[in-house]
Image (cartoon, rainbow, N blue to C red; front, side):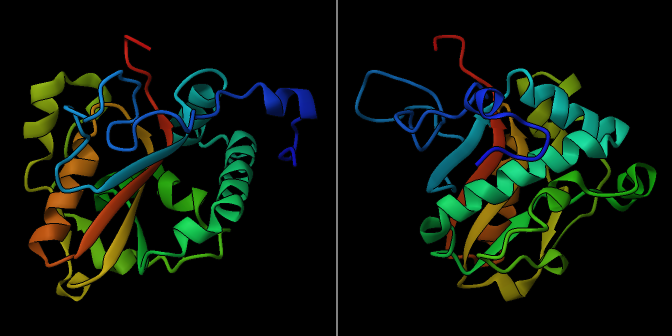
Length: 207
């Protein structure tokens, strides 16, 4: 069913993520085993869209300009995806949105990632269990190796995640460094199994 403000034709033409792509890296490859997983600590990765027009513009508008018209459209699409994939989503004990540092949360006014999953009802979300303890530069402006060092030791996970099967949720996955660092933090705190879902995934240069 089309989301608010979208006609059926526009809905069908959205850059939906292809299910035949690798569940470890989110890209297409012709060999049997993935050699470039997003993280060795993440067992499975899924996305809803490719980071292409109009999804990339809608996410950027919500994230940086607080465009709630586009935000409500994305949130409706995310909620629909959760409804369709309820069996997979509900197989986890808990879902955690990637947290913002309190300084960035104050300046932005809200966490756009948390906002996007606010209306789903299939899995518990507890924002008190993780936090970002070090303010970092925007990942989009950094190269691969600098993305890693930028995020190192920037997250905290409460001891109560021990033994839980957790689904991480982020708005955009590019190199996967944010998800990797968050997964590492959760593993160190004792989480049992970690998978990840992003609203959008950047497409690999080879298709």
